[in-house]
Length: 195
Image (cartoon, rainbow, N blue to C red):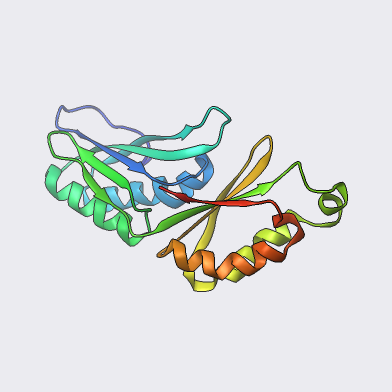
């Protein structure tokens, strides 16, 4: 049986709901949180299985937050505590929450998020034709160094959003500010905290 399939319901399963303050698409959500959490729960609390996940989208289709659900086996308080600890260790964003049936919701997270919106329509045709956005993304990652990382992006009708996560939003902004001020594709961009 796969870690993602629920076994026979013996009536003892309890539901774990995790809401991640992370702007990730389904693939990134699975790679970064859903799959690792499934393996963690199965190893630590045998019989526990991740049953699904989802991404809350804006009306334009931009990811706003993620959710991962699991049926757990074991003491609910222990599972909740271990899950929060595991997700903190893998860098879940601040403002994330977890809850288990019958227990108070727990807020957790160890990283800040920053969204950089690259203008996709108002720059000159020459800028779009002569510069590669993938090179800009590589330069953003290089500028961040060990202060954070690019975890996802979204291509909207007018902008391309790039989602950066790290221990300090302020430090990440300091590290990328020169690049955003100078790179032709970053002109007319905007930066917003992910709260």
